[in-house]
Length: 341
Figure 1 (cartoon, rainbow, N blue to C red):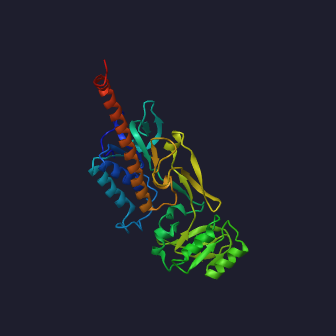
Figure 2 (cartoon, one colour):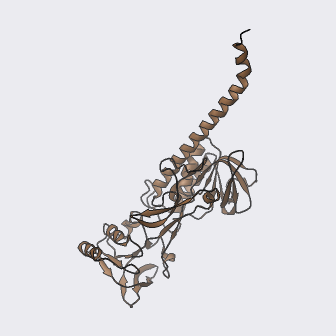
Figure 3 (cartoon, rainbow, N blue to C red):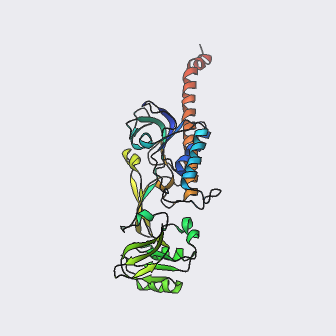
């Protein structure tokens, strides 16, 4: 769907927003209300699409992710912003133009020009390899307790240990339920970790997990290599966060490694944490592409802050151009008025 009906190769905007999620739409809304011409390129693959509901977003708690995005798109277009989706909204790469600005190439072969770019392409959750796990992602295979903890409160929850933060995850989920089991899976536990889990009342199940058990349409447990079964209605995993940074890297922007407590957890596009400015003038980033741990409310706020910074940059440029034009137009008359003969 091409909301704006603007597939002409010569289309040009003050700002092109690459990414139609919460951060991108919040930025586009702010820019449209600032009377900027803005286009949102939306590939239509939001990170939270598997989830039936979103939580912790003030005023929209319990809404579906699709509902929130539909409302956001309507608000952006209501202020004159344009939105492309599908192949026409899938940005593949961008080029810096010699005279300033950028040309963004899309999957349908079209090219759009932008004075400024806001990259809000999000990230991809790389999940552990386990049969049936991805199909249940966002439903009862979970990651964030602040997003899903309330929904499984007091239920049996299992934590799949695949990295250095498994014990920390078990500690966190213990805040929502006292029925937590740590599945050692591929990560052996140290003695002190076992002691901590014992003190917290967290059970430990030894052995590699080989599969998920589903009853009806709900997770009922996991099976271990030795044949044992651990009952759980939610399985917690720790994904690797990989930034969707193809457009950014096509412009020469580097992707940085994200570490937590000395361990790598993914990648991100480096940007100023307040304004979203990147190392390349004219390009900003907002949302999970630059801050992997950010939730919806934070992503929306980052989009707004980046949009304000972009509009300020455009205002400054327009002021300098106006001043140069004013000086050029008045230089002859001013010199004549003060010439002594």
